[in-house]
Structures are given as structure tokens and as C-alpha cells.
Amino acid sequence: MTFAIFGNIYQAKKAAAVEKVMSMLDGREARLLIDEPFLRFLSDDLHIHIPQGVEAISGDAFKADVALSIGGDGTFLETARLVGCRGIPILGVNIGRLGFLADFTPDELAAAIDDLLAGRCQTEERCVLQLTYDRGMPEGYPYALNEVAVLKRDVSAMVSIRVEINGEYLTTYQADGLIINTPTGSTGYALSVGGPIMQPGSRTLGLVPVAPHSLTVRPVTLTDDAVVTLRVSSRNHRFLVSLDGRSEKCSEDTVLTIKRAPYSIRVVKRPGQSFFRTIRTKLMWGQDIRD
Image (cartoon, one colour):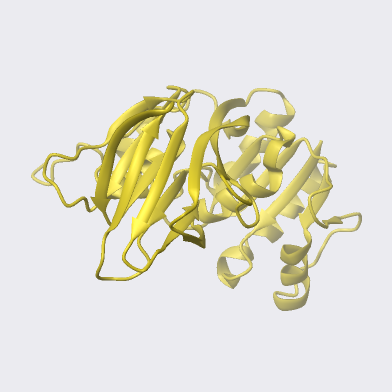
């Protein structure tokens, strides 16, 4: 099998765990590809021994059977961006903090790779969002695995966000922002501002306001075939658009359209893994501190 390895180049202690991963894969006669910036970081900054035959990934022209994301959930999202529409399953190795997407520990990796080689691992299809403008294109990559967020630029004034669903007017939010999230993103930013947790595969999207200036405003759940159109106005005539944390400035005359992308991201899951067990253990869901 061919493994493409991606990692975090800003955390030396955590990135050093990749040496164990490479040795493990090399011992199983796997073909190894490593993202070029990460490879330079490993060899030049950490002085880690790179096995013979390792190839550098330059740009997005690569093929692999599995992508290994070594880091936290931020690294996983960047790996998903680089994998894009190739359909390569991603296995997240958590050497970060929460590790909701990257949920294999380094100690579990050997068994996970053996399960992969034996065909025992499962994959989940995760919905991706696509952002388009009425004029021009978003900077860089116009897709998001977690969420597309529209946010105010300054600390004082709210933004006004007019929302249409499939061409029908829904409401105009007066708020600090609005999040359109996938089920994958429902346990991220959207959850922190009161959005609902959505089960992967539920074919839903979330519409979650950020600090709305009304007690009557609540999150809305949509089917994932919905087309969401946004028109934003603000005091300084500018606002921010964020795709999985990658942000850019927009002028208020820009009309945004968010809908499901024409491809999905495949996530490797261990046999018998339960989403509900994960949210209980990772998010301490339903825990009573009196117990």
C-alpha cells in the first residue's frame, strides 16, 4: 500500500512521533510519500532519519491508498484540503489535544495499519461544503469539511445577514456572524456557539448564528441538498468569510452561495467505533460533575 503522510510543522515535540510511524510502515514494506514542507521540517529541523525510498509530495499531483494525518484536528482539516476530491481515505493520528477527527492514538497506529492491510477498517463518507461568489472566486480552496462562517470584521458593530434557502427568504440575522456547518463541523465552532450535534451520515447542514441580537433566534437544521444564499451588510462595508479557519475579506456587495460539494471526504474508522461513545469521552457529553 502507498501511504501519504501529512503533519504539523510548528510543533517539534509532537511531530517527532512521525519517526515511529515511518519505521512502522517501512517495516511493513509500504510505499511512503511525505508532504514536502513536512519532509523538510523532519529532516532539516528535527534531523529525523528518513527511510530510503521516501518520496516528497509536491503540490496536489499525488496518488495514495491512505493519507495519514499526524497532529490534531487542524492538521486533519489541512490534510482533507490537500486530498480534495481524490477519494483517498484519511486516517487521523492524534498527537494534539482533543482529537475528534484525528482519533487514533500513536499507540493504536500499528493495529490500525494491520487492520487496513487486512481490509478490516471501515470508512465514513463526510459531506463537504462549497462556497461560490456571484462575482469572482474565493481565494484559494473554496471547500470546507467543517464549516463556512461569515463574521464581522471589527469588535464593536454587528453584521446584518440576509439568508435565503433554495431561493426562499428565511430571515435576516443581526449578529456577530453566521455558521453553515456539516455534521463533521457540528462538534467544532458551531457547537461552541450553541449549535446541535449532528450524527455523521445524517445528510444535514446547520445554520447557527454567532451572538445574535435577539432572544428569538435559534439554530436551524437543513437537509444537505439545500442551497444557502447570503447577502451581508455592515457598518464598515466589509466582512470576513472563513472556510475551516482559512479567512478572507469580502465587500458587502458580494453574494455568497453555500451548498454541498460534488465530492465527499472518506475518514478511516476502527472496527466497532461508535460516534456516541466518542462524544461521551472526548466532549464529556452528559457528564455530571457530582458523580
